[in-house]
Amino acid sequence: MREYLLCLAAAAAATYLVTPLARAAAVRFGAIAQVRDRDVHDTVTPRWGGLGIAAGIVVAFMLATRLPLMSTIFRDSRQVTALAMGAAIIIVLGLIDDKWALDAPTKLVGQVFAAAVMASQGLSLVWLPVNGTLILDSSASVLLTVFVVLVSINAVNMVDGLDGLAASIVGVGAAAFFAYSYFLSVANGYQR
Image (cartoon, rainbow, N blue to C red; front, side, top):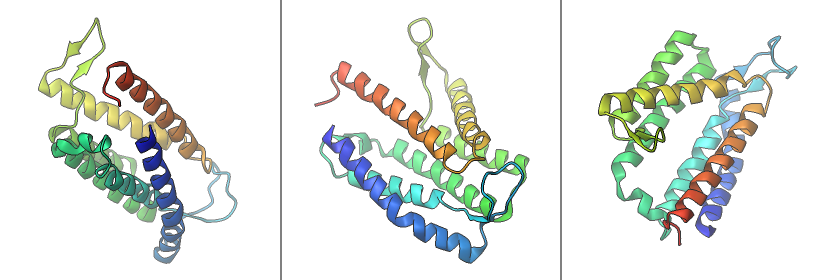
């Protein structure tokens, strides 16, 4: 558990330190959210906060590769590379959207491309807990992975009108997913 907490602290610190830099870059390059009727803020708000989150994830991953227990996750670099490639595409798409406000079909194409890159590179759902265990064939695995990624991205996009709401919901979801994964790994003896 100590390694997880150390990575969490490193990610939080990096996010905290990089977010003001991302804010300054957003102001400098004009990635600003104008005031709209559906938003709560009453002044223009800089975007690109996702850069701070991305920096936190990168720092946590770099630290995790050096820790005894967590470094085992990185032995299969194919899945880590797939995740990094998909994340990089989503980050670039988000930066462009924050600057130039892409239309919905263009964003959807970019999201499908990012999810397809991840799934085709080996990061995909291969089974479902249906009637015991349902093993998926390769095309169903890729399609389901793309679908789950699209639903996840757009579920967050739908609640992103109130400052801090999307981050809070994602934080609660991430904590629940971590707790489930951690207790599952302890129950199966994968944890020291």
